[in-house]
Length: 107
Image 1 (tube, rainbow, N blue to C red):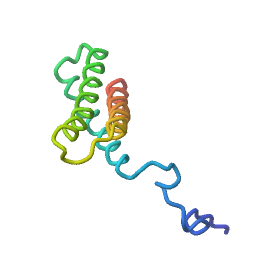
Image 2 (tube, rainbow, N blue to C red; image 1 turned 45 degrees about the horizontal axis):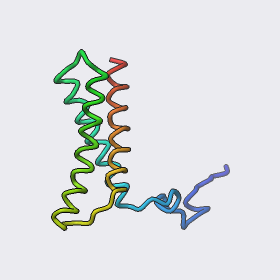
Image 3 (tube, one colour; image 1 turned 180 degrees about the horizontal axis):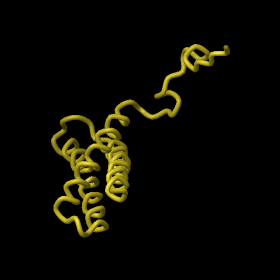
Image 4 (tube, rainbow, N blue to C red; image 1 turned 120 degrees about the vertical axis):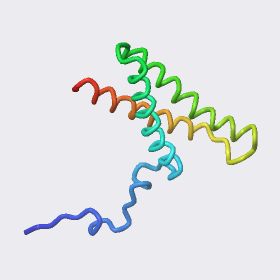
């Protein structure tokens, strides 16, 4: 009988305002998830017997790629250099790596 809806009770509630993280950081975060997952799958495919080494290599590549794009922006003056974009990508990469490791652990 009683229907509770967050959007009807709080019509101005926005997910980005709830956590106060800029929308472009969320883009880097979600790209980082895909990048971490892809790199972890590639690391597992190349060396399936060495899970810990694969995790370390995938994590190192996530850091190198995320920060590398920021350095590219700084050097070439294309785009804008912001270190928090790289941090958001690395955090997303950790989640992507963890998701694949959990999936591989239960298979």
